[in-house]
Image (cartoon, rainbow, N blue to C red):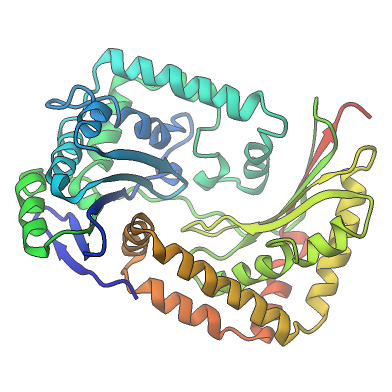
Length: 413
């Protein structure tokens, strides 16, 4: 368990405090409950774009990074489908600087034309470098578009197309900021060598005057149940074929999610996984093969992906993959296998608890799921799951009508 105190300010900001006096450092971690799932067609990529804008300065802080570096601090951020997360590490004696910086950009971010256009260019360049000019870089764009018809998970966090990013106007940007970057849509965690009463007073001082947003959450379209297998063939200048096969699975807090996590742990996590042993080490088809879930808040995807050896096809690979996965579904999972993946989960939990920043992120993440206590509750549930439960969910999820397959073909054949 991670010890914490939880408060809610009058404006709706949730504040969690995690004292740890074994260090002289402190961490602030703030989650805004906004990701690409909160975007609409034609305006995709706004959540990620704002991750960049938030470092462009605010009314009283012309240069965010410089102000933080002066007090020995470091910062970073990430955006995914469901949240945007900002974090700062600095000496605990300078913790109030982090309050000043974060509150100023929550209330009065610099959205002047120069900043907006500079960050637009940065994001467009990132889109080109990471997704268009990298081998297989657009694979998840293509796979998401194949799997989803109406849900915003159909586009990646960077955005669906560059023209969406090019098209953001001042009204789009200001509306997104006012709607999502408000205290009642945020969770602030302070961890480290801090005193609870002092931190709470700082939170009230710096964030208390910021008004709550008056808007209500927009409805996010529910993806209809998939009833037939979907396929997409895509050719590109890549060294070899690649295969991406995805199945719709339950959302983050739904029944069956933890079982799906264990399924991919058994099949595709690490060097001793079933897919690695059976498909990579013992065939000449797969150069690599992985199984994983996209841990999304709404119903997400279980993905099996791999690169083929030179001259081998994605179609050949799918046939072999299906055979191994079907064999897994039909056979009883051994206690030894189950113990191994549960031990891995325990080791990961222990490893994550070592670093202060990880504990702060964990508290923030599970609070936005509903409660920081879900962290331990979920772990206890996961380690209590039996082999039959995993097999039942595997049979329900891993079905051809529920599959979407991207055959990423090398045009060198």
